[in-house]
Image (cartoon, rainbow, N blue to C red):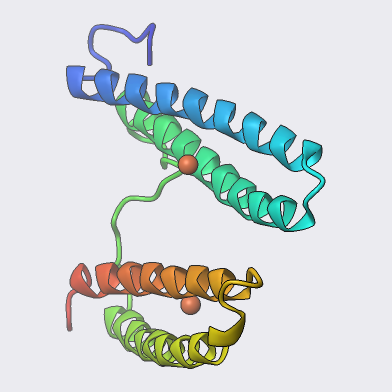
Length: 159
Ligand SMILES: [Fe+2]
Ligand SMILES: [Fe+2]
């Protein structure tokens, strides 16, 4: 992106690319800190939780790289497929996509209820274990999954 031809990326693409790559650097620094924190600590619970953070940060890093790379592909090699696919939910059998999305959405809603119940059962160990925290994180993940599915639903045309 940086040494692109005049006909290449727009100012928007150049700015965004710079922000994405800066963010990748920040995330890389945090990942290093988390790694040494996990290694140096004598607390297994702390190590366990930091490893969860590391998993997330690795994913963030991967996605940021894919976004930066896709921006480059779209600007400089528009005929190629970017790593982050174009929004193409309306290709092919959209009814099948919608039906599946609806089914998964219902499962995730059930999951929300189920996790709430487990959380209630863990009330007594809430402050004496990391279990409640882990279930809370799963509840947040479930909200994330619901957001993903709702996005698909919103952007898929009914036939
Ligand atoms: Fe992150
Ligand atoms: Fe889920």
